[in-house]
Image (cartoon, rainbow, N blue to C red; front, side, top):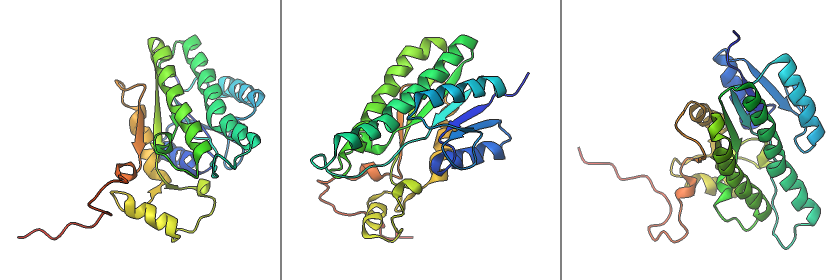
Amino acid sequence: MSSPSALVIGGGSGIGAALVTRYREADTPVTVWDIEGDVDVQCDIAQPEEIEAALHHQLTHHGVPRWVTVTAGVGHSGLLLDTTPEEWDRVMRINLRGPWLCMRAVAALMIEAEVPGSIIATSSVSAHLVDRNMGTYCASKAALSMTIKVAAAEWGPSHIRVNGIGPGVTKTPMLGGAPSGSPWLTGVAQRSALQRLGEADDIAQAVLALHQMEWVTGQVLDCDGGLSLHSPIDSYGAHSKPARLPR
C-alpha cells in the first residue's frame, strides 16, 4: 500500500513552496500544481478546464491525496471607488472561485474513493480586518473563509475536514517587491506582537499542524505573529519592549 500523499495547489512559490519543502524533508510524497516554478502539473486555477486536467493527472499518476492545501492566490490594492469591474472579477476568479473549484474537485475524489482527508485553503487576516486600500482582496478572502466553513459542514459526514489558514503580512512574492525596510512594512512589523514580518515557513508550519488536528474542522487559523491583535483604539500606544524585571 502506498504512503499517504499531499497535494499543494500553488506550490511553485511563496507559502506553497515552503510547504512543499517541509513535505519533501519529511519524505512525504507530494504533488505540486502551479503556473510556474518547480511543479508536477501546470495548472491555472482561474481556468476550470486546467483544474480538470490536473485532477485527471493526479488520479492517474499519484492517486487520491490525503492532505490538500490550496495556496494559489493573487494580491490586489486599490480603493473600491477606483477598482474596475474587470479587476474585481479577476481577484474573485483567482482567490475565491479557483480555490472553491479545487476544493470541490478533490473532495469529490476523496468521497468516491472513501478516503478521509484534510483540505486547507489559504485565506488571510484581511478576511476580517478592514484595509481601505485592499477592499477587493479583503472581500475575496472573507468569502473564501465562509466557503471553507460551509464546505466543512457539507463534507464532514464523509470524513473530510476543511480548514483555512489566515496569514498576516508575509514575505512572499505577493508583496510585489516592496522593500523590507519600507515605512509600511516597518510599521506592520512594529504593530505585530512578535515584532517582525512573517516568513513563508512560518505559515507552512501552521498548515502542517492544522492538517494533523483530527478534531478540528471549519476553522480559519490566523497565523500573523499577533498583527490582528492591534487595536486602533488602544490608548496604550504602539508595542514596546517590557521593562527589565527586577532580580
